[in-house]
Length: 554
Image 1 (cartoon, one colour):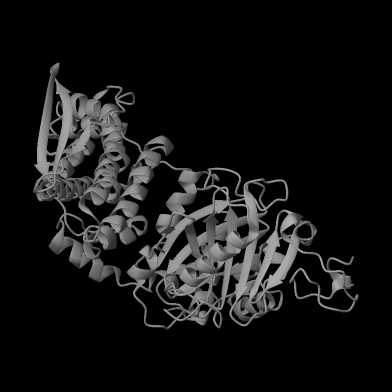
Image 2: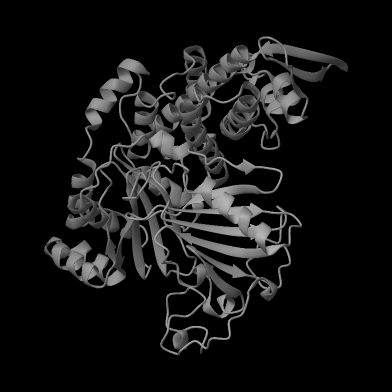
């Protein structure tokens, strides 16, 4: 290892107190874990400090980790975790990270009971079993088969994994905590929510050729979800301990450019405060992309992290033209730092070149780091904010979106008016829609300054259609479902050039301005043409804000 690489690795990993983490692991999880491999320190930290990951089934963990250790002691020479096995682990772990975040956000979310069951409870339970547990059990099954000389690679379904692998090989704590019948009822669509006091849920299934129904309250189902999560957490912890204690059985060629090798490196460079979510390339050696979520959003800090990681990554993959480091944080717009190959090579050989190379990257605009937002906001409100829809006998408004800027509150929406064709009636509907839309509250942005609140909107952009169909939402002159585009501005002057469309397309519509509203009609029958000739240096009547000679007069 060259001295610069050694220096970077030492400085990079010194950002976190691994000894304190190990002490916490030994006290809270297992005293038999005596060291932490770099690949697993971030995951161990997540399991110890993140709710709900910090809960796990102790009995499942003790039995599963004991059986895996016995497997290694008896058949260690036969065991290896190759790319297919490691891929199962990655699929299970990635699902686990996603579902744990969803549970933390939505378990106490105030939704109508039936909607919460359909949108949260059932998908969460299914993901825990199929996305997480099944993949973890495939890892255990294949390893067990390698040890005892059986081929368990074809045991893919959860039922087969439980009945044909886990139970016969002593994993009774896992087996007894999985209700396969409940899973089957969900997979076969046999879930009925009864409109009775207590909001009962009925799961129908067939067992031994006999139709049965398991009925429970929503609170009972919530307990099952929690217990299933604790089961999955325990199995994950067991696999972590096993791989951490026997890291040499992971047989991944780290110099190959595969999903598994990239993922292993991403795990290795992740630690609390610096999580590498993904490493990928464009497939042609043009650029290697490293996606990192950081807690510290200081510019100098991120530049230092990019330099150290570029050298660490370069040691494995030194043949890319560019190395792109994308930085994210819940309070910061996505930022990046990009180095050229020759720059990383130079930094790998000379610590004193770090500052000059960062300056070069800044000059060519390959360093873009945004200031984090410091506004006091509710991140959960922003994450799950939903604009309302509007329904009346005459028209419908939906698909409301926020397009606000720092000094301008702007909303977009779709409106549907059916077969109404009289211009005056359409205009009256447009005025009603504007009056409803302009007072809607919009949320703040978590990452950038944005005008928000209950104040009147500065601008509204409304696509008007006849019907809310799955297709035919294009703003094209030949789309007969499209009626017009409405550009309303409180000041009376638009700041939207050509409606946000290509000028060649915008010129094909029929434009008129009524009070504070610019309308681009699909059909010319709605526009009363004035005889007055527009001067080439006058503003274009289409509302683009350009001179006529540089817009529709071309």
